[in-house]
Image (tube, rainbow, N blue to C red; front, side):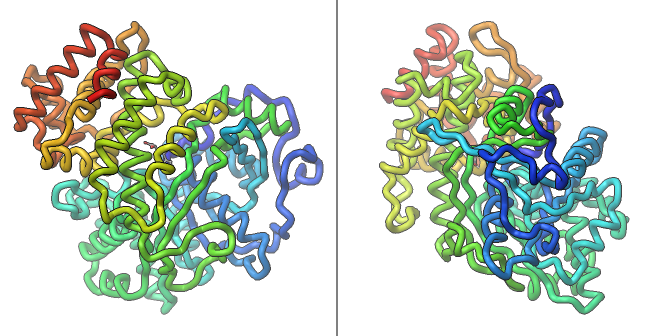
Length: 509
Ligand code: CS2
């Protein structure tokens, strides 16, 4: 779930440009919508218009718009971040009237491109905060959806509370009418809705968090309570927060990905999105003032979302993180490239079959075959067409581990189970932070959520510094003698025999 929709330099201008005007002239191989786009009105305001949103929620809404009576579910995207690059992105999106191509690559090699028209507007919040508040506070808006990344919810991993002391939160609490943060905008808009006697709405998180709806509620109510307890009570009664499990791999789109997609489509899209053919969305049917006909377009509306989340985060996202660091250290840069190696496949399979599955027990949703799920993850990661980047997955490990891996690791520790793979993850994360692999290659580690304290520990010569950072908070790895020993072994093996040998050893453990 990254926020880097439009980082495509427009090198590949070959092909027709994309806008309302060129729609009738697009290549016939590209699938186009058949609804009347000019009849759509905004019912959904989406914050965080990255590739994942554009490949997932916007695609499901696109399908809905082809059904009768769905005109009121157009989406307006909101870019919340400051800065020239983000203002530029807004310009690109607007220059294409919010249209973009979604190119899907299936594991069997077939490729298809469709135009997505569900995003009918886009606002860059720092350029016009009032327009954003007016939109969310308008009667037509019934859903605020979010893809603001795992780290965007400002929740303390230990206390599970919204971090009120965060300086940008404090600033937004003082300047309520001119917010800058996601929750500042949401709460001010809800304040305006309440003052105008309007209904509440649904806040729909589409981020990979445990209980993403409950976490969103914590954040919104936490902010609101600090501002005005009565408003917080009103929100508690008038706003619903469905939990959801989201799944679709959407790689970063740089120049090469963009030109590959564009040369397939024949369209010079400034903001193309690429993805796999697979897509899944399991969501609680808790939409307090209505929703698009998601149930008719492949979305699973169910009460047991938490179980799907456990399986997906521990197996898929967990495997992604387990893969990214050792694979980068081996010199690989693409997910599918790493998966061509048997050792890596057996290491990931061992992680899923020995470290995760034996311990999920009744957390597994009924009817889900975990062996088949494991195989499908390997197949999806191996898909050579999609070209997913290890560096995308490695990004922000410090926020991802607590969501994707800490349950698994703490269970392994508690049960006295095999720690070799967990230890290799920690050792390779340490090496990754140095920005170089063990083959002489370099990359730029990106860990925006490492705290000042983390950086001090890492810069010190303290033993087991990496295990003491917030990436592994709550696990107390540095205090665990057995873990320290496995960590030392993994590190020594990686450095002396090489990362492949360390992987082979971990795969067999
Ligand atoms: C990845 C996810 O960023 C990551 O660490 O694991 O973006 C993953 O691709 C999606 O959750 C797939 O649904």
